[in-house]
Image (cartoon, rainbow, N blue to C red; front, side, top):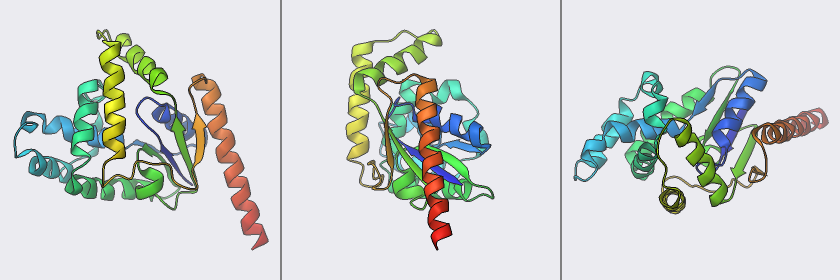
Length: 217
């Protein structure tokens, strides 16, 4: 079973994808970490004309071991860099192969990101699109940073989230939009536990319907 979970930053998609993976005993890949790792690897070239080529080279050389430093990869800075390398076609192609290989492993997997249901796994068994309003997402991300002892400018963080949403939606290579067959889940007013229960219910219903369709055939 392949489960695709998409949505904007701090919507809860990563937490829900990890929860679904635990519930169903499936491996989980946070694909945003791939772009964050590439961005962090080439940050010294951010303001130079070498940035695109360096980013493509970093994406092609990416290894799973590069994802083992969550403290570095989950900062606001890493998120900003991720959205900048994500618009580079060569980076997306290199990381596409990485993600497809992960998704197609025996038994299936859960992947979360911004274009899983539309580009990476358009044939996923279940697709979810997680959303929440910008203010709620800002507050969640702020609490994450504060829990790590980081000072947070909520005004600046709110605008970073809005700007990243706009950049991602205009990305000609990413297709950051809800797949036609994706189930919408708004987490604005939901606790983590309630959102996970809702996500599991969506998966169970979708798989039951698929099983019913197979029986009819």
